[in-house]
Amino acid sequence: MSEPKHVVVIGAGPGGYPAAFYAADLGLRVTLIDPEENPGGTCLFRGCIPSKALLHVSSLLHEAREAQHWGVKLGEPQVDLDRLREWKDEVVENLTAGTGGLGKKRGVTHLRGMAQFTSSNSVDVDLVEGGKERVDFDYAILATGSRSVMIPGVPEGAEDRIWDSTKALELERVPRSLLVIGGGVIGLELGSVYSALGSQVSVVEMLPGLIPGADRDLVRVLEGTLKDRFKEILVKTKVAGMRKVRGGIEATLQAEDGSERVERYDRVLVSVGRRPNSENLGIENTHAQVDARGFVRVNQRMATSDPTLYAIGDLVGQPMLAHKATAEAKVAVEAILGQKGAAFDPACIPAVVYTDPEVAWCGLTETEAKEQQRNVKVVRFPWQASGRALAMARPDGMTKLIIDIETERVLGMGVVGKGAGELIAEGALAVEMAALASDLARTIHPHPTVSETVMEAAEVFYGHATHFFTPRKRK
Ligand code: FAD
Ligand code: NAI
Image (cartoon, rainbow, N blue to C red; front, side):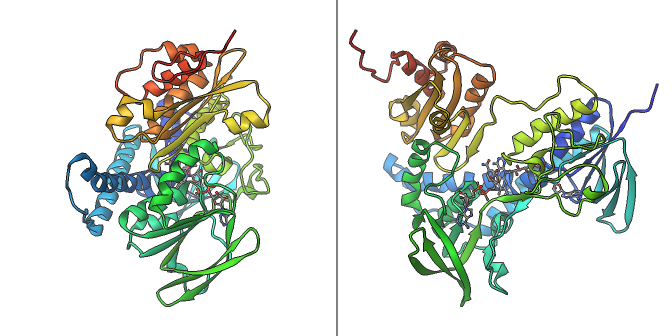
């Protein structure tokens, strides 16, 4: 029997470690290279997981404050920041110790260090413990992820007051005032955390609305809540300059019409996007190509222009999401094994903003349907009519479906509301399986759950949702 091929996976985030595990499961010899002791990458160590642990606590704080309306007096909750930080770190440690164990069980060799290509068949690894090691391979999967973009104009000596998401997640302190630059996913999730912990949060977003990419009607529901919780939300606004002042930062906020205002904040969180980690990888020593924005170019099989190199995850482009990276990982491994059908061609990639309420969408959005002049009907089911939403005191939600009028196929779904991130998986399945609205309408959903809003939204399409009145059209 011939020796199994050796695959080197560079980077152990939600792209790299699932690639390494899957390759090992399918019988390949695997070396996973990453500086951390255990697999996890940005997502598990500095992204998805710690942020969701803190968002869980934020939601608890809000519920405790709300409880008086339901006859429960808990008083103003007290936060022990040291214990909260410790708990968040424990969540990360537990999970990453688990991924480490799973790698070992599969026989994946984990090399701690930073890899650099010396050719299309070898990397030099700068080992964390010191020294260098050369590793030869048959195939490599690049999964080095991305890092935060910093805006220009950070005043000298003020670096500790101008945070990126990693710094904000360290939870060093709760600033009295926090300016969030960028009203996207990170800004709103971490802004929500700090607001719940007691910071006065202001958000500036250069575009006309928050979370570009999501339908406006979904975002409006979230905005309704955030307007109460944040000090202010300024759209069509940029930070034109920053100055270090006693204990904080003075920022010049510039509106689109050119008007300016100067405000002082204790800390600033910059969340204006992320860029791929494609530098210092020695890519120039291979035949792989990088585009003008730094993304490694790949085809549908996740193959670069170098026959031995594959690339996945944040490194290859938008959307920069953990589940997209993992799905691409599977394709890359199957392509390496020569499986003919291997291709990254999803019908949809769900997106979730884990704010309170959550915003989630998948497939075709209403905005895209309008831009593309698609023949669709958009149906909405308001959560005010959901027994479960009312019983949770969370009627601030909506479920919508974008349905092709001719074929009745579900092309997209959008949800805003508590737990929207869990609900969207049903929409993703429907879109991926080319389900019809009648499939959703006729699937018996458990009562009382907010999942019934998906079924009833589909019934709205036919004009007979039990809890939503649709006037009959005159013949
Ligand atoms: P990464 O997770 O970035 O992993 C890359 C790994 O490669 C890192 O460990 C890095 O150290 C290592 N590396 C880099 N260069 C080298 C080298 N030369 N040699 C060896 N190793 C190297 N996405 C979601 O889907 N849901 C969320 O809720 C979510 N929340 C987020 C919250 C925050 C605050 C942030 C910052 C991101 C969040 N994301 C979320 C995005 C998600 O983290 C990324 O999409 C995902 O981690 C990308 O996975 P990846 O494997 O491509 O890269
Ligand atoms: P983002 O792209 O989501 O949002 C950045 C926002 O900043 C945009 O609205 C943009 O218009 C705005 N902006 C850019 N430059 C600006 C400026 N100079 N002044 C004011 N506003 C400016 O990027 P973000 O929030 O940094 O997150 C990066 C990526 O991480 C996301 O795109 C997502 O892929 C991933 N992520 C995913 C999460 C999830 O799935 N729940 C959570 C957190 C991050």
